[in-house]
Amino acid sequence: MSTQNNKFAEIVDVILYRYNSVDSKLWGLIKNNSRSRTIDKDIILVSRDDLRNIIINNFKSEINKFRSIEGAIVYKEANSIYFMWKLVEEMHSLSWIKINLNKNAAYTRIVTNGDLENSTKTLKFSIKTIRGTFRTFDYFNKHQLPLVNLILHSTEILEQGMHYGVVKLADLLYSLDLYLSLNNTSEVVEIVSVFMDILEDYEIDNPETLVVTDYE
Image (cartoon, rainbow, N blue to C red; front, side):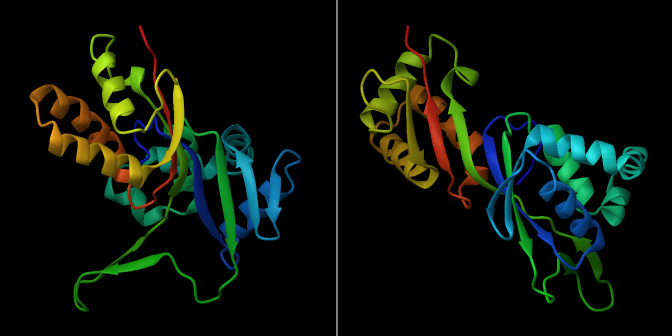
């Protein structure tokens, strides 16, 4: 999942590795933060602002290093700090990060690409969105909103007159796709396409989705 220009994700789930020195240090710093919330022995909830401050105060040299290099080179040098920094800097709608500590000694983020002779190794850092918000007025103008709301009511994503509703993303996308198949006009295609363009990247995560709208 890309973090670039992200307005949807509000809570994400990430994994730190117990036997990686950088991950272990970051876990300890977060766990000792008085405002983090311990959900389970190996699960912590930390706010975006607190995580950002922890990284700035304890990993300044790493951040400066990543800022000084660009393109493919940065991925060769990347570690958890790089990805977490990108997370808190680019996902402006983010409120909370759920952090899981993996204690499996066999766990690895290293992915080998290519054949045996020309293989390259890269670091894969997974970010799973577990809750997000889609605000219709962030993507549609006031002239489009009546049709947007008609679609949301017709699909029962929102009840009549309600400004918000919570639905699993897979159900939302299915309902919109079904509505489009029965009402295939250019106006409906335009509206549904915006939903799909923004939300399809998160379909595999199937997060809880808060849909918020406005009326004239």
